[in-house]
Image 1: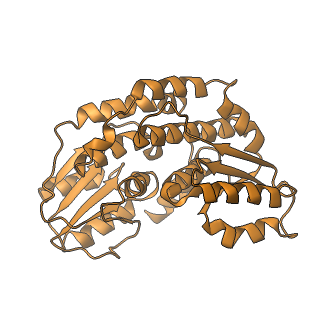
Image 2: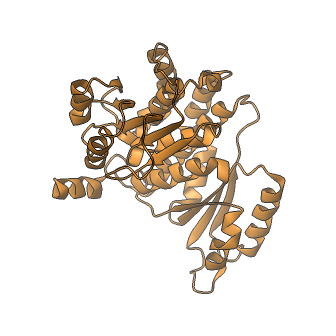
Length: 319
């Protein structure tokens, strides 16, 4: 996992090169549904955040809940190609639309796509699904004709930061030392909710830690009461604020920190450096920073970062 996180910028660069000829007819497409589970869903959630002008719906279920018709593009994401929910969803949805595109490394899904003559993109093999995010996100950007997002993308600068974060004297390692034995409460603004969710999932899988993500200003209308409550054990949780920029929310963050100062174990605000000149570069910076944070938390917790034993047991029992 160490090498995969360190080489995340190279993964993005490879994906851009590999998908330069990828295209799909979007004429008469009014909405996009991206279906996936776990690590295969996160790219869809991020795509929804960075392209608010598109109607993107992310589904994580055995069957469609959203409207699927001739104006819907359905993108099925399953890294293994054998995800139970994804295969079930495909079987339900293929009776409703012919506008289907698959993103997978193989498995049963690839065979279905080939049999039914649908377009698809084959992902590189040998990755845990959660570690192929850069590639999958690049495919979605290209597929949905959002190439302008890639302008000013500075892969070299991203690699410099990733190399820095890979060291035990880095800022990320210091943060991990302060939170690895806590219950992290991750706070973002609404437009970065997918990034907060990404960190929650990475802490769950890589670090074997419980965590959850909330957004501002909403968390000031509910969670703050539970966190401040006398029933909440002192130093149980830490607060991780991710790139809070809206003035009213900065004020809320400062006040919330003061209210919870006697409860939380640690509070830290992660900001995008000013040397990133595009929104997507800043977003990729956060993804890589937070992946390293989960890695170092796992390292300090002395766990097998790659292992997802309970998920493997569950899948075996379901088979």
